[in-house]
Every structure is written in structure tokens, then in C-alpha cells.
Image: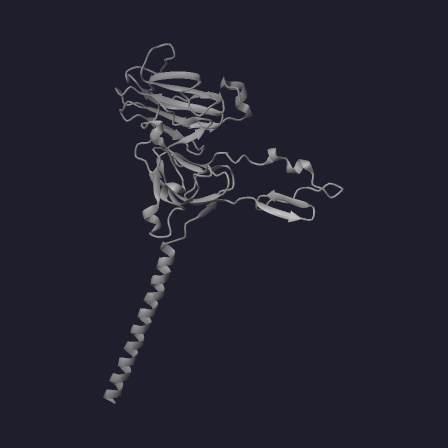
Length: 354
């Protein structure tokens, strides 16, 4: 009996051990599934794609295909509907107007904007854009619109030739990454200096690319692209000789809450007609760079002794608050910025030609 009891105890221990191992394997598989979610994939369909999301972005352009029918042959892009037919069965000339086709030399872009205290890291995971057919891609440290850049050429630590980096597939010996080797070893990684970055592409015939975007904390933000959601924005030069700009691509109402620019023993005053090296400029312009053709609403300097609430309505395509610093002072300004509405029209400080 004693031997039989020992055998029963032995089998029970074996069963418990097996169950524990099985549960551990199931639990481990569940944990891995929970801690490694799939990366969100975004399909780029617009020529100007603006996003504030992280994740993977992909774009594919296929060449037009030749379609034949009893009415004749014509070219159409993948997914394009057949041309409209006239009453006699022929094609409507208006539907075949070449002017309605997109220009193959058009430059498109993926515009990233993150939180004010973040930078953007872009990893090109796959590039199949051929240089020989006129295709080209570029990473821009900032934004570009109509030949103007944010941050402006005079407000960035890097020269423009280092902020724009062009590339295409032939520079890596073919479609990239190559089939041999890991994707990580062939990937190109770019990082912005502020919360705005741009990936431009020109694909005349056919091509594709896949990129991944990640946002990182920026301990000392200077230039900021306003996304319209922050309760307030801080502009600081951190004691350095640099210009910092807050830019919004919409007509806005700007309110200066607090100011400490230049001599701290002087109260806030208007500095338009006084030659000072440290000041805060508020205004608007048609283009993206406020250093060109900016219409100024006010230029102020000094130190506020409490909450100011200095409101100014800028009815321009671009609204900018620019902190200009000589490096002799630790300048800073707290401002709010909201989109202007109809009730703000009568109180407009600056109006630009739209």
C-alpha cells in the first residue's frame, strides 16, 4: 500500500509540472502578443498629406495601362473609369483632355507636425523611385511651400544645403532595401530639428516607398509649427544668439501672456522705432518664411510685471511670432494662438492679400 501511495503521488506531481509548463507557454505567448502590437500603416493618397501621427506610411504609383475595346484603344491609369461616351458611341473629347491629367513632374509631400516639444525621426524602409525616369525624393528639415522654408533660412542652425537631402533608388544600386541583407542595415534615417518635417517625392511614371515616422522629446524647442491644439506656446532662446519662430498656416489671434526680452529692468514697450537687438515681432505674411515680406503688427520688448493679454488679430495666410535674440539675454515669451473667426474681422490688426 505504501508503494502504491508513493506512485500515485509521483504521477500527481508530474501532472502538476506539465500543467505549469503548458500555462507558462500560453501566458508567455500572450504577453508577447500584448507587448509587440503591429505598427499602424497609413496609405498616402493626397499629393499634400499632412499628419500628426506616428506609424508607417506607404505610397504606390503604377503606370497607366492600355485598354482596348471595339471603340478603339486608349490609355488610362489603374482604377480610372472609362471615358464618357457620346450618343453615337464615340468618346467624349472633354473626358480625354490631356490638361485634366496630373502633371508627371508634380512634387508632392508628406508633411509631419508633432507636439511643440518634439522632433521627428523618419526612417526610409523601402525606396523604389528611379532617378533615370526623373523620379526623386528628399527629406526636408522643416517645411517647404512655394520655394519658402520653415524655419526660415536665417532662423535655422543649419544651412539650407544641409537641411534638404535628396535620394533615389539608383543611389543604392537598385530598389532599396536590397533583397540581400537586413532592412535595418540599408535603411536611411533622418531627424528634424523641430516639430516639423517633410518628405517630398516626384514620381513621373511609376514607383513606391515606405517610411516610418517616430516622435522624440526635444528638451530645448526653438522653432515651432503651431498645430492649433496647444493651450499656450513658449518661445525661448536659452541664452543663445538665435531666432525662434512660432508659425501657424492660418489667420490667427495672437495673445502675448508674459514677456521677458532684453533688459529685464524695463517694462514692456513698443520697439518698432528703437534700434534694439532683442525683440518680439508679431505679424503675418503670404509665404512660409516670416523674414520675407512680413507685415508686422507690433514689435515689443522689455519685461512684463504680470499677465498681459495683449491680443492682436492677424488676417494673413501665415501668422508668425518671431523672437529675435542677440545672445546677451535669456529671452522668453509666452503666447497663445487660436484660429481667427468672423467675429475677429472688425478687430484686425494686420490684413494681408490672400
